[in-house]
Image (cartoon, rainbow, N blue to C red):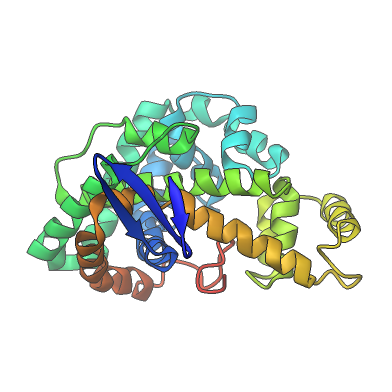
Length: 304
């Protein structure tokens, strides 16, 4: 893989396809909400509750729903893959998760929940030619991901594809977002940002409020210690705001994340990638208009 003028290339036979980071970022912005319905839709909560999970808040179901493709692994492995969550928070929910339901049952429940949620959100468009075409293109991109060193992408990529196009669209969105997330962790490691430092440094550039990042379960002491470490590195000022050096580092992390997420779109090609983006627009609007997703997230979409 080589880089030219901010673009990345991947060799496929004798052809190198270039893709701009902005195009990679655009597809992430469009696909992320389609995946995230899993963690907020009442239909998914109902399926999780039927398995025995507490759904008064989203975290007891969030962890098993997202981690189920990994199998019945322990909290340490889940915390490693999820990265930015406090290991204590992960253990609180994962230690009992597989006693409530085994991963296969959770995987089936999440597809049932997404089926119901998408039908509620998209209505008659759930079977439309536009969705069918979008699902086919997204699946092609998802099947092109390189899962080496990407545990969550790999775990989702080996699952059987559902038959219904709208479920294929959701599964493709899930593979692609976990592929990007795994690459983001790699970029954070290269930048020397541990899990809590990754959140503190992101909050310092205004990606989201500190209160939103506190949902990851870190204590005030751990947050304060991370601020001290980042300040000592010259990444934060005495008020906890990002310095120019800190902003540059976060910019490099986000740019490298885009580069590491580019391969599926390079292999899909710019024409089909842009066609997918056009097709996703109405479904993206429908998800956002549903009111299910929070207005502020820890991902910094639209702010970085």
